[in-house]
Length: 80
Image 1 (cartoon, rainbow, N blue to C red):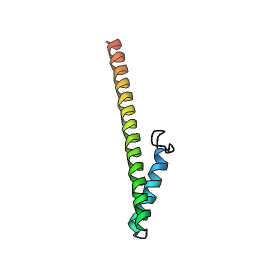
Image 2: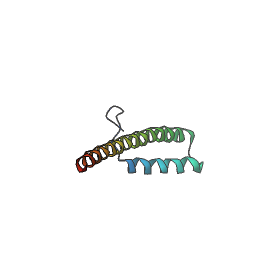
Image 3: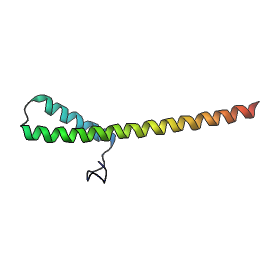
Image 4: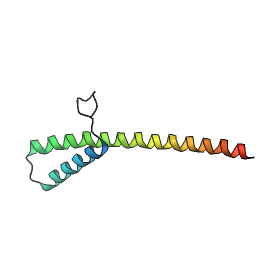
């Protein structure tokens, strides 16, 4: 999903939707072995990309919370 892997960059929502389609196809039991393996590999790649995007989002939220807490400390100190 990055330039390094040669895959297109997908949004989290797009990657998750494709992953859900792959899971449904695999669970159906109607795929040939080769197609099933190819979809499984794609699913693993999509899962990793989703996990990476979630980790990045968590890091951003943590950073923003830290900024807000710092601003609150400055505001509280100024009120004293």
